[in-house]
Length: 106
Ligand code: FES
Image 1 (cartoon, rainbow, N blue to C red):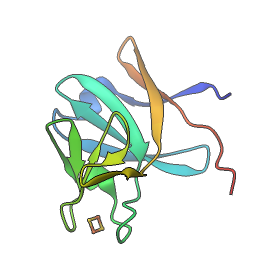
Image 2 (cartoon, helix red, strand yellow; image 1 turned 60 degrees about the vertical axis):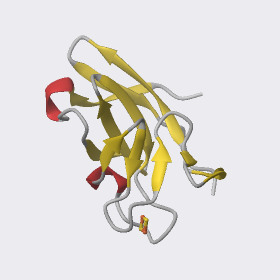
Image 3 (cartoon, rainbow, N blue to C red; image 1 turned 60 degrees about the horizontal axis):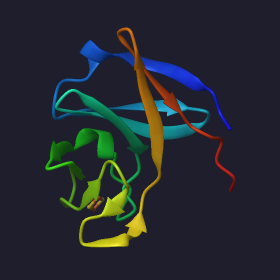
Image 4 (tube, helix red, strand yellow; image 1 turned 120 degrees about the horizontal axis):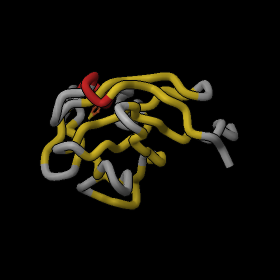
């Protein structure tokens, strides 16, 4: 169980883009998918690019380095959904984007 923490104002993240934040010691990416906000791990499992530097296409983030795509709702890699990145709960309160990020166990 973890609490929600404010990371940004909704005006901070343009539509179709992401931004990176550190929450509870973890690097996370928060994306604006046409006005809906989603949060995932910021680290691409391929070679470690920051996914927050990618862009959103059809509900997935396109990695800025080699264009692997991950669904920002489930975290699944679009080529093989068994490979997943973590996703986190997001809520918007007023103008604030808040995320709930549990501490990493390993
Ligand atoms: S580092 Fe993300 S696709 Fe290669």
